[in-house]
View 1 (cartoon, rainbow, N blue to C red):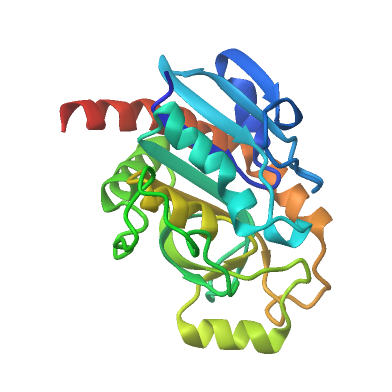
View 2: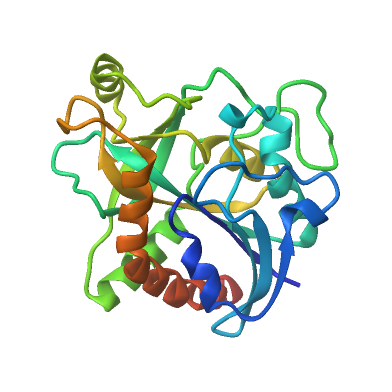
Length: 259
């Protein structure tokens, strides 16, 4: 059974093509699974191996702005946890806020800010998944960030870290909002990931987050923002992203086994 789960964000789904012995299951064929309506999200679960390590990869995800509730957005993470996932790698396309970030940069998430006004574990708590109150001081594992940074260095590039701020969407942010987010300490902005991470940590799953800077945020770049730019940048960095994950998955497995 897979012990590592991966959520592939906008434009980053090509990694799934590197999964060996793959079994592909469309979301529509999985009971109660929400179906993605966003371009760049294939909407299928791919189960197989990478470097001999069994994994389960979500090729695409759903978002609250598509009309799904927080429980529906995070239902796939619950399923992965019940399948036996101990480590979750969440990836996304993000707008760069911090000065110096460039399109195509891969950034390790060190923390997040939930600006959606929603929390997926509010309401009645199911003790089978986790406790009513739980710690989020290390939402993104320091151990996994170290492994990812070391893996990238061996491949000849570096990975900076940053704080990801999640908004509800689907409209892109205004320049005034971006200035406010920068003041709050955000380096990146996007419309996904955070609710998935909250649910993963509720279940005791260790999390690694990776953002691909697909555009610079409003007010930083002069031209209007659009989803096509997000997709194009994701495809452009796809080879480096795939190289990183392909090497990182066996590294995580080795480190977890030796711990």
